[in-house]
Amino acid sequence: MKNLLKDKKLSETPFRKEVLAIFSSYKNAISMAVIERDLKNYNRITLYRTIKIFLEKGLIHEITMSGDASNYALCQDSCSSKQHQHQHVHFKCSQCEMVTCVEVAEFPSLHLPNYQIEQLEIQATGVCKSCLLEK
Image 1: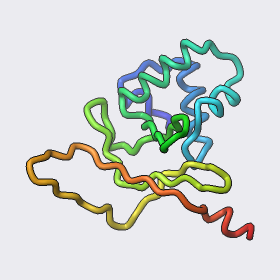
Image 2 (image 1 turned 90 degrees about the horizontal axis):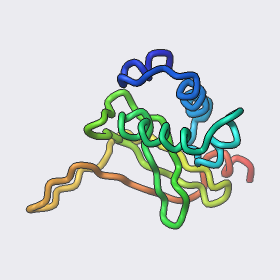
Image 3 (image 1 turned 135 degrees about the horizontal axis):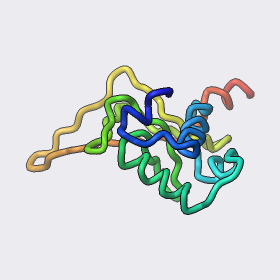
Image 4 (image 1 turned 60 degrees about the vertical axis):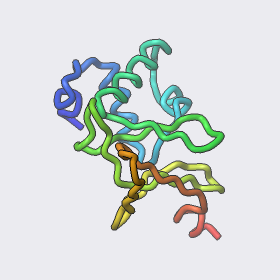
């Protein structure tokens, strides 16, 4: 995390560091409400601009599950301002409603004749490990 802002050619402002620290403290994707709750002091416009630049530079990616507000998660090192490279499934637990990026051993490939796929996103819903263990 230390050089992540520099690696993406972003100024290391105290606010950006604080927002990045919030993302780093969660293993799952988080909503804007969670980010707002965890910030000490913030200006809403500055926060939205920060999220936008983090998305544009490939620091975070947006996850929009059907009917839900967006969630955000840290990207892999391979993501850039030109393209996000995600080879995982976005999973939403139907019980705790947590959205998680789940790595899979083999990400499926898809061939569509006469189409060029630039990004493939797979979403799944069900019950997460934590909720299954609580039963």
